[in-house]
Image (cartoon, rainbow, N blue to C red; front, side, top):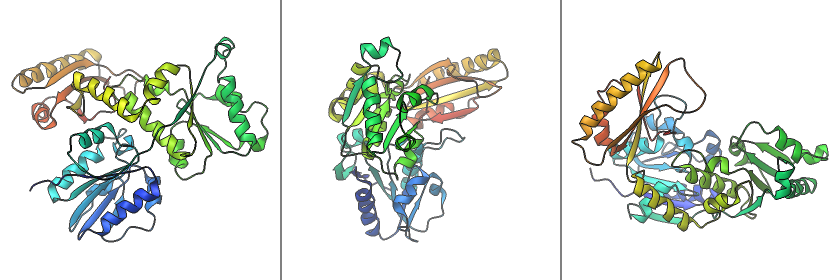
Length: 380
């Protein structure tokens, strides 16, 4: 069955994007499945579902369909389309592509700010664009001054002054700080504020964004975006821009206020146009043979002792190298261990492999591994 080119709808305004998706769905003769990445986003489609237009999250891929003709992946750039904290770690995007291939359904990618993978599809003319109106990131940077650093302030004096002025003036302010230890930030923000003014400031991590989609904020502040940008992962700059776009969409009429100790780095990642950022990152990924030019899979080997787990991992890598000698453009890296808190009594070692998924899956499917994670959340 010949696969149709995917359709792309890029619209920053949620209501307009939903309207465009529903208009497309109503033209279809069969069933349409619309998949959203987060349960809260179902509110955007409240009351629009019918027996022919099904709206759900990831698990709706496993519904029993009578005549599925269209699959819509809304906000395709959201990381929550992947199950990071449970196994098997299903990726909705891959599941949607497989379901479309099995049923012959038309695949539709919808987004307010397209992922790098979708941008590459557009550039390669591998899809058909219906609407192209993405979010434009407009950051306003407040760096830490010499005085701020000298007095070891949790916030630049300028940033604190602005936020408190907004709160006193009745403006609702969302302050994102992607670390849980925000006590010092809170003290700096609430300095000499009335109880009523304090209620106008919402401070928290990215988990706040789920509620922020359906709440009214006048201003948005992102403290220390460098924590995201400097994450040891090839996707860190893309994640930062996608997060910045989400923040920008909360208050589209005003720039997002970025508070940073690394103004030059922040400007290089968030302060440039989409086209310049995309060109730079794509060149880097092409050189390093990273997605979208290849697929990544992380194999995990677990055992009670580090010595035994490492020995098994070395055996797996040797077997992979033998297999990859016959498969072009495939590589294996490791064994390595992931940094961070220990989550299990068992010791884990990982091997990262790159290549076309169909080829590498054939190579590792019968090996003595404990799990395989396609498009892994972390690769180090």
